[in-house]
Length: 231
Image (cartoon, rainbow, N blue to C red; front, side, top):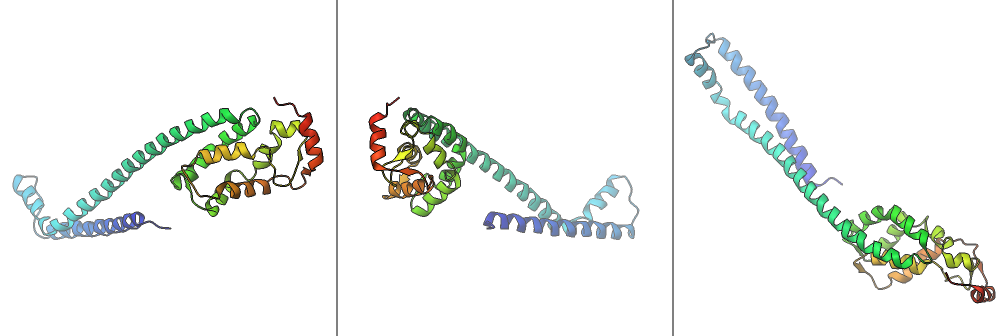
């Protein structure tokens, strides 16, 4: 989608091209007329006559210079605005990253590899959240963020969970996950505004990304739970 700023930029550039062309035609016309009037002499009178001859087109020349100046001034302003925007963005990233770093400490016991992969995709997540002003307001936004960043990682998170490994990867039912609590603790902790049912919606997305053939056996799970020794 073309922004108003881009439209204005191209319009101004078009005007500059036309003004430059007209100015060149005016210069050629002036010199052509001068050739028929007098021979140029390098003297005060000759230079004065030469300069005066440009007077009939002074509005055109002034407008051309002013428009070119405005064009480059606009670009300098845009560059300054972009630089300030980048600084604000970088400062916000530093603050946001600090919050996540603290949360990483709390999930390392059972999900040490989640931290590693989360850091790898962290900036991509930040860019999406920054564009949404750190707000996830509906399931559509949540789905877009999850699928673009974590869809391919969910199974890895799950199967590298220390409790999953210690329990032999057995599940009591289809709604159980070993790593979801850590994942949603990190993801939702990096957002400022969320909608009411976001946890259940996120869980649905997360479970759908796990191995569809995972072992689900309530009795075997209870046995594994009794034998499991926490780290």
